[in-house]
Amino acid sequence: MVEVEKMNRVVSPGKSSSPRRRLVLGILLLLLVDVIWVASSELTSYIFQEFHKPFFSTFAKTSMFILYLLGFVVWRPWRQQCSKRLRGRSSLLFADAEGYFPACTAEGTVNHTLSEPLYVPVKFHDLQNEKILTSNKNDKSVKKPRVRFSNLMEVRQLPSSQALEAKLSRMSHPPVRDSEPGLRTSGKFSVCEVAKISFFFCFVWFLANYSYQEALSDTQVAIVNIISSTSGLFTLILASIFPSNSGDRFTLSKFLAVVLSIGGVVLVSLSGPEDSRDQDTIGSLWSLLGAVLYAVYVVMIKRKVEREEKLDIPMFFGFVGLFNLLLLWPGFFVLHYTKFEAFEFPSKVVWMYLVVNGLVGTVLSEFLWLW
Image 1: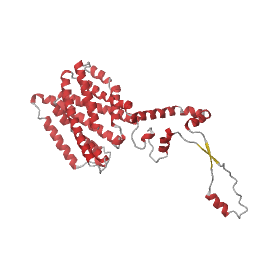
Image 2 (image 1 turned 180 degrees about the horizontal axis):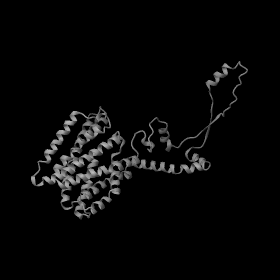
Image 3 (image 1 turned 30 degrees about the horizontal axis):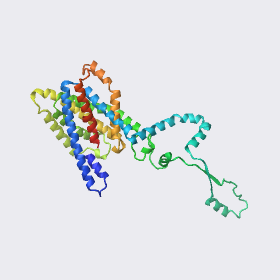
Image 4 (image 1 turned 60 degrees about the vertical axis):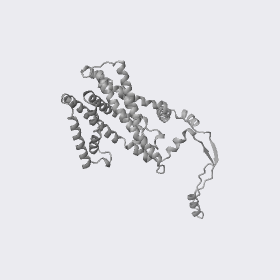
């Protein structure tokens, strides 16, 4: 609903039919995402009956976020960011060399970047000197200035490809470190800045999802989903302790909501069958840990990113998938030699289930949720 309200604020008030259509579309997408999430949870529980490998499942599904990075191939703004970044890096690499050989490079640089010189006659008009000369024209002791300037002015033009950079350089804006010129007006993070944020948050994101997978392997899907929904409550608690703005302050109404919700979660956890209560307790703890880790992730990223418009969310998740794929594979060896989760490859049928669950339950659901 928050995303729908944001879309409504973007549309102009005069067009009343468009906000209603977008509201209906947003609600339908949210319902579809909820259905996909529940179906993905049920499919994960079914997979664990034959292939009980929570770490393998989490690693495979989160690594599929790397498909978002295909946007650098099909999405033109992302390609432009990369090309500008590469040009900026190449210019920095050769900057020192050009400093050692200024006589050799200055002329070639000017000829390549500037047009041919055009000499235009100039008429100087200095009011201050005229006043001085007028006041002292009767004073013979004061000598007239003998400074003479050329009557011709040399004019060179920048190529049209650098017109945007030249215009942005003359605009008043706060300095942005390591960002592309095209992003200064919009305030978005650059590609490297998004990658840095993804690097620091991919571990918390992975642990939160791993805890959720472990919970699904130990307890019922309904209990896991109910306890996982308390992540918003832990977000309120952590946000009040580590506020990012004045709206995160602690209030009595928020405290009562947290107490009532946690009480409801406890009643749901204790209402299972007697024969599976111990197993459900372990799964509930895993699910609770996942909810806390997800709340930590949300609060941390809110403190890092002041406005959600600054962060390109699909690019962020794409780098999260890339870093999970490159950095977390040693976890297979650790879990295998500690005998916590023995490593083995799944069968073809399980592979098919994992791929479908990752593409639909992870990649597609995140895309629809962002939309």
